[in-house]
Amino acid sequence: MIAALVLAGFGALAIRVVVAGRAELAAGDEAMARGKPGEAIQSFEASARWYLPLAPHVDDAYDRLRSLAKSEDPRLAIAAWRAIRGAARASRTLWTPHADDLAAADAAIAKLAAADPEAAPIEAGADAGPAAREAWHQARLSRAGRPSVGATALAVLGIVLWVGGAVLLARRGIAPSGALARRPALAAGVAIVVGLVCWVAGLYNA
Image (cartoon, rainbow, N blue to C red; front, side):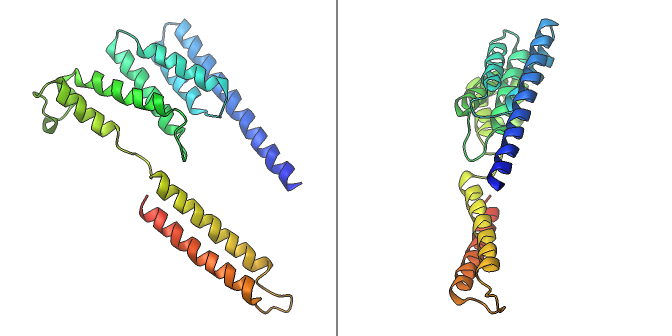
């Protein structure tokens, strides 16, 4: 019964993601038909953010954004690349599903931004040439804006150990008489302590 409820919950969530993603994709196509590429980029990015593995609307949204990124209008092109970058970063968990798109977006944004001498502050060397400005932008775009994968995994492991130890203590660590069952209680205690340490370490290094 529990497994059925969990599967039903995941199924409902998946349906919600697909329906919302397809709706945003359709809204973007409608905006393009009305000659509103700016609105279309926003809708395509929203569609890509409704990420679900193997969901067709995600790849379709990225395809449309990449097509808009080829525009000869630099403002439209950089807006499309920024949408690709935003969607790719928003869908990251312990891995990045569209890592290639994210890398391409960072490189393209840096190149487009470097074409404007006023797009970087004085310390970037605005008069040092496009190559120096591009390197400056690339360095800042490549900075991780989220906790590292290792720190996140460590924190998650800590929570699992902590909760698992508490469940073990509640179910097997206490005998019917109310006394502590030595071995289960000891194992539960170790799991709780190790879990807390991992959790704090993960948060500290995030």
